[in-house]
Length: 395
Image (cartoon, rainbow, N blue to C red):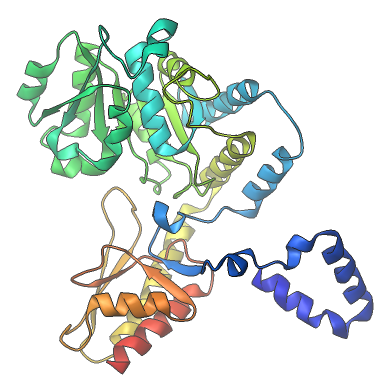
């Protein structure tokens, strides 16, 4: 949008081109409307990351073009899911795949599929699981807010801590084992042991790896390890539609998951609708992501962090540290520290958010300011660097 505004500003100096631009604007008034300004909603520079509340990441032009293409025609939705699911499964070396309404929608559909299979009577009864397999094994250290999507299917979460606990907990009512990938370092049962236990007892294992791209290798890693179901968010590192996600794994479980969600009307996941634009956009986003030069991307993320770190350290008393989380959000995070008797982290966060342009940093910033500019636009890291330096220097 900024480039278009600058372009239109110079149009009067070129009469012929100005007439063309005016004609185009007349045909498409949306070209000149600032919708967010009309609504009083303020855009910001994203130096935080792919948080859902901060609208995750921005879609590449190719994804937007695919979604616009899909918006102009009607197609059978189930046939589109079939075709796109087949293509995605091939790309990820999985038996089957589907596009879901985010990773949370994948958790709901996948868990439901593990409970009901393709039994239509059971599908119609969820979340009433009376007489069905209705227990999900999960490590206590892996409990997290998103397992609510699994609980919505009517199951009971059975917490364990050790391999011995797993052995005691498994029973004929066990429907599934849930693994939160980011929590692997915190759990006593490590990832391969967890998968092997599921194979031993013939219990489906489900890995929630929603925020775990990059690296790109993770997209195929967990199926190769033996997980029966895996989910990734579509709108984070893959940069597809924010409301889309990927669920892939065993063919029978994907078939059952699809029957438990939209567009099937009498299903527990009917509200988890994914439209044709999102399905096609998710496919194109995945294609682009798997073809990217990820080493070059990482060098650019490191450069952005260095620009901000160098600028911040030019202020007396400021120190910086770069941390790359081992699993989720596996990109450089800059931690900036100083004497907070002069200005607190909360005050810096507030000034960044309220300034011009608005800047969002990692929301959990408390003891130090955490900046993660990997999904920022080109040139914005320099703006963030300048603003942080100005605020710290003024204190």
